[in-house]
Each structure stands twice: as C-alpha cells, then as structure tokens.
Length: 370
Image (cartoon, rainbow, N blue to C red; front, side):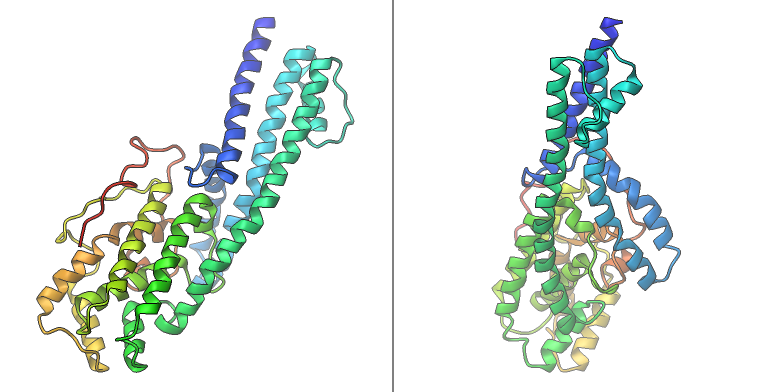
C-alpha cells in the first residue's frame, strides 16, 4: 500500500508541475507556445459554440461567438485550480493515510483558503499552505493578465474600425483603392502604409504572447482583425502590381511585415504553410477576379498599368506570401464574410491539442525575397 501511495504522489507531482508550467507559459512567458491544457479548454468551449453559431444568421452567430474566447479564458484558472485540488488531494492521501474522500475535503479547503479542514501532520500542514498560495496565485495571474490583453485588443480594434472608413464593411481591397482614387490619395499613401506596418508588428507580438487575442472578436459582426489584414495586404499588392502610380516602398514593407506577422501567428497555432513559396505558385484569387477588380478600378479613373498579364504575375508574386496563412486563420477564428479572404476560407479547422512534429517550422524560415 505504501508503494502505491508513493507512485500516486509521484504521478500527482508530475501533473502538478505540468499544470503550473502551463500557467506560467500562458500568462508569464512571452512568445511561448500554447500548452495542451490551454488548448483542451479552448477546444472544449469552441466546439459547442461553433456548432450553435453556424445555425444562426451572421449577426446572431457573431454575437454568440463573441462570448466564446472570454469564457474560455476565464475557464483556464478554473481548470488549473481543479488540477491543483486533485493533485494535492493525492499528496494528502499519500502522507496522512486518510481516505481519498477526506483528502479531497482537506485539499478543497486549502485551495479555496476556507480552512474548514486541517491536516494531521506537519508535512501536510505545509502542503496546505503551499496549495492555498498556489490557488490564490493562479487567480492573481488572471487578474493581472486581463488588463494587458484588453489593452492589446483595443489597440488592434482601433485600426480595424478606422479601416471601415477606408475599405468599407466588410473590408475590401478594391473598395479601399476606389476611395483613395475618389479623395485623391493614391499618390500619398506613405503614412497609411507606415501605420499598418506598425500594426502588423503589434499583431505579431501580442497574438503570439497572448494566444486568446486571436479569438477575441470585433464589436461589429462585419469586422475582424484577420479580414482587415487581408484587405490591407491585398490593397498594397494591387497598388504595387497593377496601379500605375510611382513605386511606394512603404507598401512593400507593409506586405512583408504583414505576411511575416501572419506566419508567426500561424506558427503559434500550429498551422502548416510553405515558408518559401515560388512566385508562380497557385493562389486562391483567380485571374478573372483580378481582372474584374481592375475593371472596377478603371471605371472610377484609377490609372491601371497597360500590361495586365505582368500585373497579374506581380500580384500573384505578392499574394502567394500570405494566401495560405490568411485563409487558414480566417477558418480558425471563423471570420465574418469578406472578399478574397474568409469568403474562400472553407470549414473552420480545429487546431490540434498537441503540437505536431517539427514544431515551429517555417517560423524562422527565410521568406521569399521580392
């Protein structure tokens, strides 16, 4: 019997260590990978929410999915505390030689700091204090973490909301360039691309440090950080490939900043992609859609380059860098409809609970040079 108690205590110690590491890596360590426990909690909430949201119209489904990430995030400390309660119950059972039911009572009183049950040995008393400190510490981690995550959320959503005035709702790269032409802004976009370049840098940092941010939805059912990303990247790609204006290096930097940012988020979510695509690899936008976009731009007086075949090849060369990860992230967060992104993203994919082999592949790979 003593051997079994020792074995149970050792197993509980391993489980406790992995649980505490999950909390530290989720809330403290920057740019770390999601843990299995965090994935399980988010997937447990995601499956029923997604099933119910798909049965409703776009606005109602969006309102329902807005609750998903906050509830999953608040459930994480509860999951950690539950594991702490169960593992310390195993410790008390091993040390005090009491029934497991009694051990659960002692552990529950300790982790909630109620103090209604008392251990009979000094070692168990020390364990009670340790467990109480861990329980309070896990809750404190969440409390200190929430302001940070919502500050990042507000920074992200400010630019997403501003984009509605430039690209419409849902955001469209073609609408964005049409409005630029209407207000005589096509030749003066340097500041705009610079702002979005910094926005993508912020997305890369915040969405890989705080993974739940990717699942936090915008206030409007037509807005999303990922469809906004697609609209801006496509607008910059169209500008550089097809619009006959002086070359704008900031637009090129925005594209590079954007696809590297989305790739880092894809690596965090364990989404596979080709880190070094060829310039002529297939993309999800068709030549007909590209030509229709140029016709719409030409109708409002936008100067279009004469060689449309070369313009198409150049557009493909830019879009191929972010096409796969853009659609995959749209599917992952079940993004609202937007042209050239979520409208062709397919079924929302379920991320794996455990990391795939060769984790982090593509994250540090050299992207295609323009």
